[in-house]
Amino acid sequence: MDKGKSKKQTQGIIVKILCFVISFILWVYIVISLNPVLTTKVYNIPVNVINSLSLKKNGLIVLPNQKFTVNLSVEGKANDIYNLKPDNFEIFLDLSLYDLQKGENIVRGYIRSIPPNISITKPNDLDIKVQIDEFVEKRVSIDKVIDNVNIDGFYSFEPVITPEYVIVSGASKYVNEVDKAVVNASFTDLKQDIYQSLKVKFLNKDGKEINEFLDIYPDVVEMYIMVRAMKEVEIDVPFINNLPEGLKLESVEVIPKVIKIIGIEDVISNIYKISSESVNLSEITENSIIEVPFKIASGIETIDNKNSVVIKVKVSKIDQ
Image (cartoon, rainbow, N blue to C red; front, side, top):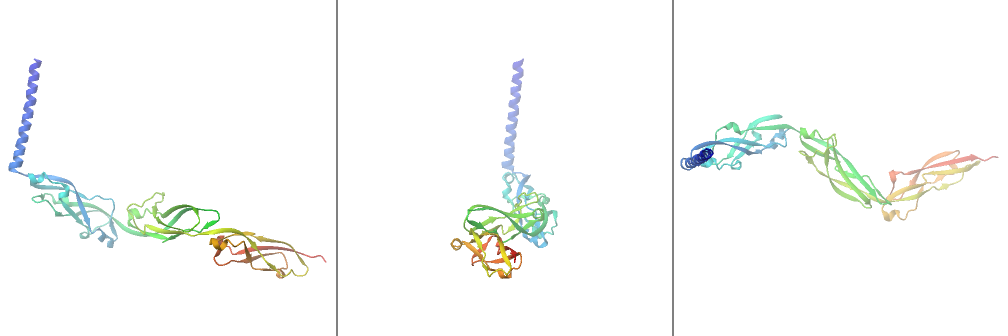
């Protein structure tokens, strides 16, 4: 009995296979011989968006990061239908033809190229959703984060960035997130001037970089750090004349006693002291604090642009 049941199952499978083969042969015959008209759908056909810059005159812009494709219902002979691919179609969307508004807009693309003997059965398939945003532009000052370490005997000035600001523009969704623009650089063992081009980065309020989808001008700025030789020298204060009669000099304090000077190495290497203007003792009648200018040679500067020294003069009366 089991053998009989197994034989029937085998026969059933053979019948099903034969039916499938016959059906396939008939389908091939129909397609090849009769070539009937069929309908199908072609998916993910890319859309070429043109004249997007025309929106700027109205203060608008296409929101970035959108993928424009359509799925077209088409009709044609079987031989033509079965060979269709998305890149067989050229679909364009001309944004200058529409009165677009901020937000979602539904506009219709047009067919520039389509395979022969193929027709579109549903024109609405050419409707495309486009997200539009406000076009904004703002000026952002550049913050510089520069770490520089000098070799002993050298001094680096404050880095100079040119230009001091950049223009960032684009969709308001992204531009309005910009909190600051920064450039970063790090240098060690500085003993000569540094010139370098630095890439500008934008940060949001959380300190996260957000350069994507932004137009930046310029996107690179120039940094210059002037480096000069530095040395510490004594301050020499010359005194002229004598104290008025009846007074004697108790003490003189010079503040500061030494100062750091900066300049070209060949120039400052031969400088060992800085002299101030003379202090006229004949004009001192009591304890005095006097501010006296330095005499600094051309090409020499002092740290923090200090240009004077304080003299504390203490006197007393002579007992008669």
